[in-house]
Image 1 (cartoon, one colour):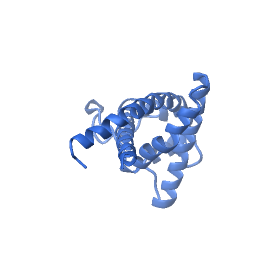
Image 2 (image 1 turned 120 degrees about the vertical axis):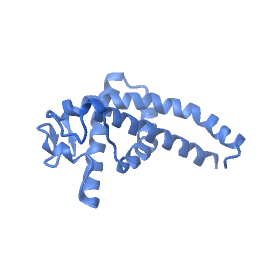
Image 3 (image 1 turned 45 degrees about the vertical axis):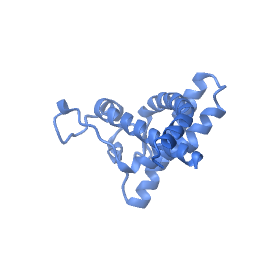
Length: 165
């Protein structure tokens, strides 16, 4: 039960962190990555960001079951190689998730990428201009996963002491 609780704790943390970073990027950096000014529903001064519920499995399960063990396995690599590895792998994960959503749902939530001259694949499942950001995100999530692994026993103990379960 403690192991499951630990996974739930880390899954939730990774979703919150991932969606928060996605929200911040959609407010501040998406136009530069796209190479064009994206249409907004509201004026830019409102700093409206956007995320999709469809990203929860990618952020939660992707970090928990892919990035966490990979980060441990490649921790001894030089930071430049880790950065490049994350840039490529996270770009591939985004493209694969976009492809799966497109085939299953008939759309993917970042389909505005298709209008970009920097798109990868005809449908624009990812952007070349995002690769540097994905490398940095991988290094950031490396640190987040290290912190979450250290916090997990304390979170499990908290839930037991609070008698929430």
